[in-house]
Image (tube, rainbow, N blue to C red):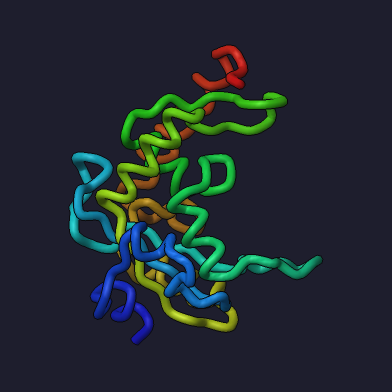
Length: 181
């Protein structure tokens, strides 16, 4: 049931619809699914669920302040240091990852992040379901579905090794470049 809601949602939401106030995304725990009008890589299909995420993540030692609204909005307008989805998409789209600030964080820089945000506004669509313990559903979905952009718990996916290698190469290249402001 939950998988169907994410794989074939009744409605997909755009960045323009999500980033308004009040946002239609509820400030509760849940699972969100990302679909793309244009695939971020030639080996991936457009128009289907490619990634699922959760809010909050399971934290044994403290309480997370994350919820669906915060996470979905962050993916649309944040940066690669705080969003594995943005990191993955930027790497797939060939944006240059850079060490920034103190040199501990990696993003695509102001221009690259703006380019990625625009690409997501044009192509990324999201849906969600409320779920009190979303980490349990996330594990089941990753096991049952073909989610090529998820890395965690997803070694069985055919795209996993290519994506992992691409992201590692981007990180290594970032370490070789001067720190960006």
